[in-house]
Length: 166
Image (cartoon, rainbow, N blue to C red):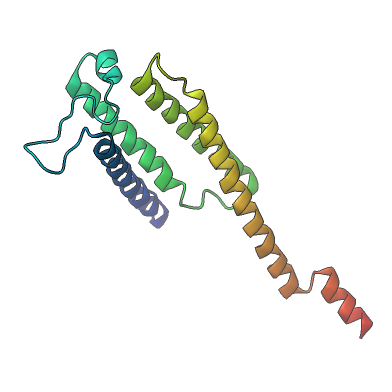
């Protein structure tokens, strides 16, 4: 296994485990998971209205799907911490695929948890805004890094003007 594949696998597993931790935290906040007492109450796990259980027809299946969805969401977030590619076209393609993956999982999670009660569109819009924010911040950092590289190579206008003035 190459180092790149190992790095991806580690990020997927750690991200998935983080997704489970977030699920349990949400469940604790919603009051459906208890740290004390006999056992966690899985009925309506996390989103207590029971929509997913009703849609899937089984409490155990609903809990399994809920854990799978949060693992996949966490894994997607973990993968996003790795560099996607070295060249522009591949970076754009992988970023777009990651965005579509996360948007699809978000829509599916919202639909399964709130079917008929809430539209997934606001959640998807919030995720899209998060992507725009992250890409904007990354672009600013890349711009400053590129400026520093140009400065060191003597490719900036100010440095050339100083050298020409000598």
